[in-house]
Length: 83
Image (cartoon, rainbow, N blue to C red; front, side):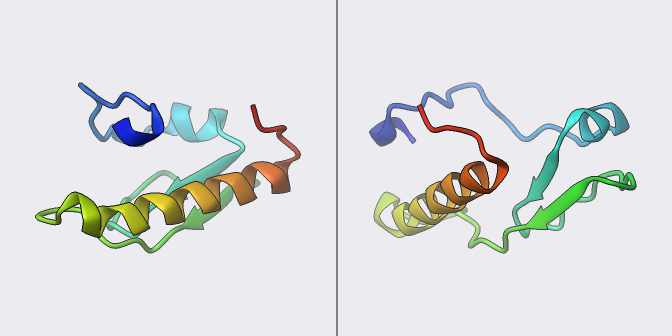
């Protein structure tokens, strides 16, 4: 992520809570067995991605790039301008 100018130092996975899900327009999980509260009317997407554990940066880059493509497509679908 540093290569893309995105700082993630100190970041960590956060648990899903009902409050977080209720505030979201779209809930995206990444194929890691995430469990989150289900609320009617919310859009749920599960992006089945390779786990980065134990991989080199060269092996992780394709997954990072796949996530970027998916996020950009989701933003376009939601009508959110890039920038």
